[in-house]
Image (cartoon, rainbow, N blue to C red; front, top):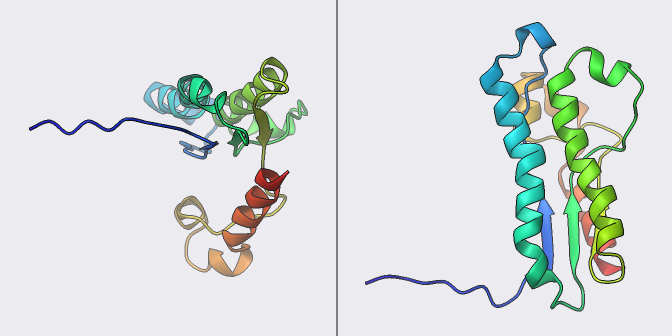
Length: 149
């Protein structure tokens, strides 16, 4: 018996998956670079591409990438060049696809100004980091606000 699932419609795509390694160039193994580029930039691009035919059939089509505003100040690249490049690739998908699909699919980015308590923050920040972060619900509320427009 084979189970076949047919996608009948997609209204919203959220590209939230991300690989992170906040390491400098010499301390970032090639496998980590490949992982970040494949998950962050390539994954966002190809998942969006796969969803576009379905999104074009929706009356409320949205792509939302959790990616930062583009800022070419070297300070953002200095300590973790590969990660910044990978996340900026997601942001560049927003720029390109927003223009390409204008009038058919809303394409936006969402990025918090402050730290959000996630598994990544637990990994990077260690014990007690939760008290320094906002709750994930603020991102959900912001996304919902974008989707309502």
